[in-house]
Each structure stands twice: as structure tokens, then as C-alpha cells.
Amino acid sequence: MKNKLLIVVLALLVGLSAYSQMKVKPIISSHNFDSKSELWESIGNGILNYQADVMYIYGKLYVTSLMPDSAAHKLPTLTEAYLYPLYNQFKKNSGEIIPGYSGDVFLILNFTTQPVQIYKHLASEMRPFSEMLSSKAEGNEHQGKIRILIKDKNQLNQINGIKSSFLGLVGSLSDMEKNVDSGQMPLIEIDFSKITSWKGTGNIPFEDFVKIKDLVTKIHAQNKKISFTNCPNNKTVADIIKTSKADFINSQEATQMAGYFEGTK
Image (cartoon, rainbow, N blue to C red; front, side, top):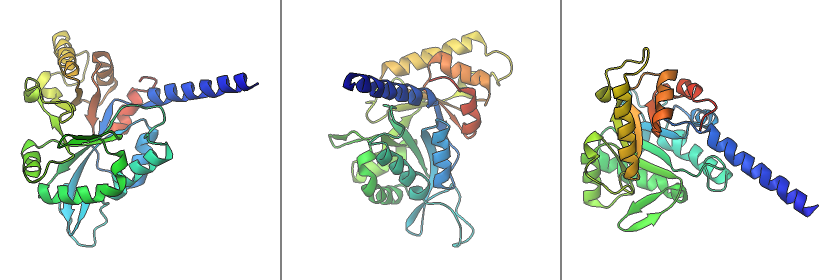
């Protein structure tokens, strides 16, 4: 009886793992969330990676790229829209964002202004959630689930010039040959429109698809992940992402794109 029960439990766990892996979509959502419910809805659609604009306003970090017109604004804070709901998932699922998903989750932040001030406040706000943060700074490495990245090298240099930070960097096409440690630069972002003039109608030219596959192979060889931005949002692009084995498409229409990846890992 005990053996049968053990077999049933193992089968359920394997099934849950396979289901979770299958649900995760290769998408970075670049739409600024207004509330924690948007992030939970995103997770329900298999979207686990995010990009958000962050601004320091009167002692708090808000999710916005523009200064609000009034002090009575209703903008969400970074903690409300992203950090708390991610931590809720992390605790609820015993250290995972989705049960059975073993990969890191990227939270890419665009610091609009005052990068040092934003980082100082971010470091303070992250303290209650530090166990879920994967970081590597000053030789110390902590393995969590969330990697916080920024795209602006100059901003990161400003921050690290004061104190080595837990932030990682999103690289660009020009970083491919620089062999930056993947612990500091785990992701390379490529502008799709710089690789091909194809606009999403019909089939992509074969030589352009070969370029994409070659980029994916080279970046994976450096133990980094690759994301394409400025892509058309359609099923053909989803097929290109899958077939080329690219890791992500960065999209403001993430929920729509998720539908094109249904039934795939």
C-alpha cells in the first residue's frame, strides 16, 4: 500500500513539474503593471519575466516613465506591483515562483533618473525580500529566484562606483565579443529590426533566420540568455523564437504573444 501511495505521489510531482515547465512562455513583459493583480494574471498566462520603468518620487519608487502631474497620483510602487506579488509566489511555492520551474526570473528595471538614489532605495526595499534575490557582488553569491537587471551601463558604473551592487546588466549586440561574466551579464538583448528588415508578413528570409540562429548559438555558448525586442507580435514570430531556440521575446503585448506559445515549453 505504501509503495502504491509513493508511486502516486511521485507521478503527481512529475506531472506538476512537466505542466509547470510547459506553461512557462519565452516572454519578457515590458508593459508597466498597475497593480499586483496584473502580475498574478501574467503568471497565470505563463509569463514570468518582466521589464518596468522606475522613478524615484518623494521617497518612494514608482512604476512610471513620466513624472505625474499631481502629488495625488495613483501610480503603483515597485513593491506593490512587482516585489510583493513575486515574494508572495516565492513563499507560497517553497522558494519557487511556479512549482517545478527551475530557471531564474528576470526583473529588468529602467531607471528613469537619479540611478544612485533609485538603487539606494531599491536596496532598502529589497531587504524584506532578499531571500528570493539571486545576486553576485564583491565575491559573494546568493542563489535565489529573481535576478534584477538594468540596461544602462553608465548608470550601473555610477552605482558600482559607490558600492558594488546586486544588479546585473542586460547586454547588447556589441557585448557579444566582450566575454563579460554571465553572472554579471546573464542576458543579451538584440533589436530584431537590426537583424532583419522582415516586418512579420509571410515567411522570414532564410538567410535572416540563419543569422538569428547563429546569434542564439553564440550567446548560449557564453552561458547567457538571449532576448529579441522590437519584434512583430504574431504567430510566425513565436515560431521563429521556438525554432531558433531563443530564450525570450520582449513584448508590451505579452498576453497576446503568450497565446501563440500555447502547448510549448
